[in-house]
Image 1: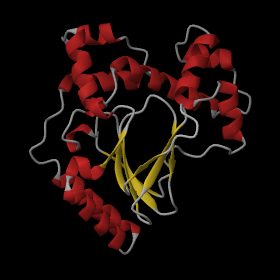
Image 2: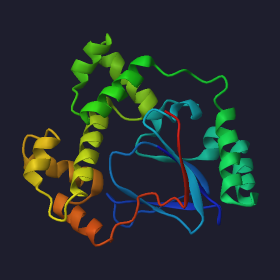
Image 3: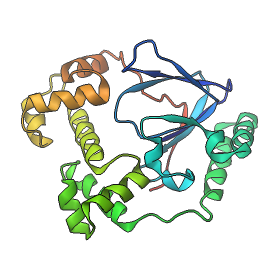
Amino acid sequence: MELVFNLDEDELGIYDTEQPGSYQSFSGAFFSGAYARPLFVDTREHVMGVHFKPGGAFRFLGVPAGELADTHVDLEALWGRSAKDLREQLCEAANPAKRLRVLERALVARLKNTSEEHRAVRAALDIFGRDAGEARTRDLAAHLGLSQRHFIKVFSNQVGITPKQFGRVQRFQRALDLTRSSSTPNWADIVVACGYFDQPHLTPDFRTFSGLTPTELHRQRSERVLTHQVPLAEQVNFFQ
């Protein structure tokens, strides 16, 4: 999940890769929910924001994180007038260090009187981190002493997507990381290392999350065709 500010213009645009030609315009400060598909942000030169760690954004939202899945929302809709005030302060700050201090103070202030995280979600995220998304929802729920239905609900409320979706994203990201180590990736080894049944099961995840096949994505990254989905000029990783 991302919090993004355009410090040049009070506007940011989103292109949905599943709908060619689609374009949505938002204010210069918006919150991006957890996405399970590729998207591109039309940024200007001077953009900054926060990249939240999994489960780290929900205490700043005021709504369950799952309500923002696969969508963006103007920050003012979540934070009211303070969102505009914050963007103005960021625009007026003299340098990046001062902007980051302004942003950090605003985020810390919003932690007061917010919901505490469910300990089972933190434990589940730790398990996902160790096994790169291979844990099954049913087994995780049983291990954590929750019903499967309740576990899915609390996880989605805090992380923004279901445990199953999150596991798929983790596994895809691990596969993507493994392609960086070679100019000619051994896809059979990557399939085994990431717990895929075979390569035909790996390819759909690449198409779902990147819009490209494994070989297309690796080629475009190697040729520096792709840009970051949210190319933040100033970015801070925030909050467990």
